[in-house]
Image (cartoon, rainbow over all chains, first blue to last red; front, side, top):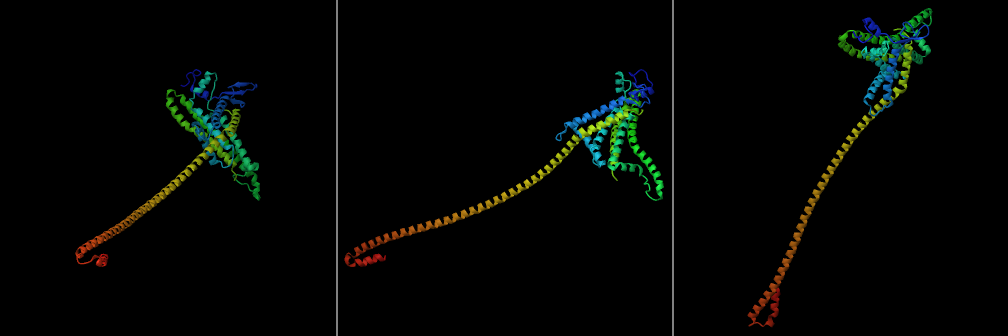
Length: 282
Length: 156
């Protein structure tokens, strides 16, 4: 068992559920802030998710801003070259997909890609290291991969969702947005006796298109969450195997490098695609 | 696993990071990349131009060398012709000089011969007169026949 040096003897299920428990702070019924007694309480914050996600966001900002601040067109250093490869890659992806003009899309894509990548990358830190260190420092729970927290992935996809609505309204107007929700996929008849059926058709379209619209952020966040959560869970299960974990852990980690990068790329790419769909005028 | 305030916190964090990226990271980085692309394109164009110029210059140089060679050949030919001319002139001069000297020599010889002949004639006539005198001393009076003897001497 990988729980030596932890909090005394644990069963496997205790070990797993301990690893999947966020460090939470919430307001209880009496109005006081309490730690880790927040099941079902919506006024709670997953402190570890926020901490790691903001920390990794700052790492991204620090790295890229450091390069951007003393960037020069003449002789790029190694790190600048790396950063420029990433920037160029994102810029190429955006230009291939998004044909409108926007100052937001490309930086949005870059932020999403690098930030999600860094958050996913925390998955490769051996699962016990940081929780054990935190436990030694007196912190009972520590979940280090922010993207295995559904709140984090939903938080990002909701920002994307509002951007989708914003871009749709900006490029097609409020009427265009409403029309997109009600006049597709079945065009309601506008005259003749079929007019009686129009409200039903519009209602049907609205239900269908609302689901399609809402499915975008939901699928975006659940895809990332599901992949990372499953990956994390497998790392935890492998960690339960004792000495045999070493080759398995290595194999899964190598495979996971692919997933980490791929999921970051997919999140960025789908964001760009959704926004370019939102700003396309028919 | 519950949905809670973390969601809003993450959304706010994302907005802040995206805003920062849009404001302070993306423009300088992309600006540098585009500037470098421009510079590289310019450099390649300059290299092409340089290559073209080099080709042009080497063609020009070849032309100049060919011209120079042609000119040199011309000069050489001219020099040969001139040398031939000089040699011919020299020959002609030599011939002329020889003829002149020959003529002078001939004239001198003739003069000398004439002089010798004159002298000889004088001596012969003197000898003739002397011999005739000796012969005729006895029979002919010198004064009587002197004119005849003079006429003879002149005819010799």
